[in-house]
Length: 227
Image 1 (cartoon, rainbow, N blue to C red):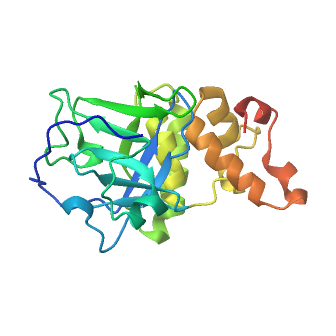
Image 2: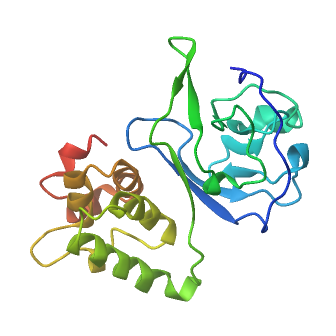
């Protein structure tokens, strides 16, 4: 749907665009959550843009200066000239992003389009964070270290967001190194804490593995994830 009109944003970005962003919404299911990568050579409406790794969605600055998320093929074809989108962010003053990258927005509200109800809703809790840059050779060590931190204190204020970020390390999170001897697997932790983004990533990896290996990676609480 078209985002309601508002004041245009400024262009005073202090630093360059991040190479990758993670979109997450713990309170609900949106098809556009996941990891987005910077699109080389694309500057729609004068700003950087990112597309989801699977290619269905794109995060971009609209003509109104609002960070928005829409269908990638449609917006590429229209050269980002359309205000139709699935989500958009507007500041408290009704303005656009004012030169802040999507993960640096302060205040304001994300809104999502309810296709069934045909109206906009507040997307309270929707978050965009920068994916940490990790050297390939250190990905496994970094992921193992972060998983251990999550197990040690799964109720820390930032634990849920760190759990979502864990899937961006590009390590095999189902490898035996992530399973404790007592069977307290990473999936079990994610399910017990309600970390939907990590559950999705883990279960998607499980589905991609062969049927004969599936049993080695599931635990008794797999059914609780809903995935």
